[in-house]
Length: 376
Image (cartoon, rainbow, N blue to C red; front, side, top):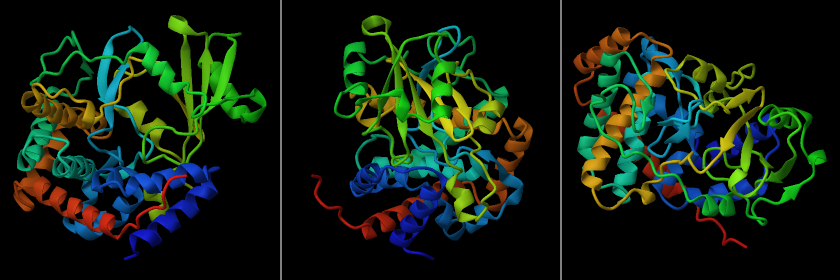
């Protein structure tokens, strides 16, 4: 088994062959990886695909469980968006690493990320309760046949409650997203023709656009890949779209499958989902809208009051939404049968044990990660 340093060097060398990479953003990513096991996990799906068959061989060898999975799933890979009828939808919002893996990998990674977040005191829910809550939500979704989670008036009774969603303050949102230092204005000539065409398709014909380069994008897993923003108008009438480069999942790097492309579009086409109407994928790029309503979950921003009630509902919702994605590849009864078989063959605590083992592996890798140099 390679060390984490060797694994990182190999993966990043491969990524440079897939797309142009911002070395400054990679340096930022390395610095954030050192901050703790939870951000380390978020940034290193390439390490997960190496460790998964070694740490959880009993689950990894179950070929009958393979489907089109999220891959890089974790507890901050959820948020809100507006659908075509301007209803607020809650669900998964990052599919860069979509790939063919056992459905159990998504559940284990989700539970492992929650375990690490709890150990870093970002959660109040007891660690042993988290896998149970995730599976309650997952099985409930299978029983219902799948359904998107609409906040406010969903039209379906869900076995958990979620707050209606709080959009960011528009002034603060645009101030952050269009900061002149982190998101400087660039000319159209600096954009590839493919990116220009995606921006044109994302706005009304003839729209006057301002283009920006993102120097400090959010997220961790995709840090290093290029991102650009196009903005129309200003003030309350402002609209913006972000384009981000896509590369094939790290799984296909690990398996040495050079002919594979990004599976993001395939996963979104299959999943049970109320889509963001502005979300597009095209070959090597992904486009999405930037609006104050599209809020990404960050554990530090969860309200302190009522956390003990909110967190169990959130975990059930995460399990439900994970099932929504998997139901794009399997029938509900097949996934239910697979879960029953797992409990019989591996044990009812299979998820808790696997999540604990992968969390421990992540902690060990993080301990071996070098302290980064001080930021200039």
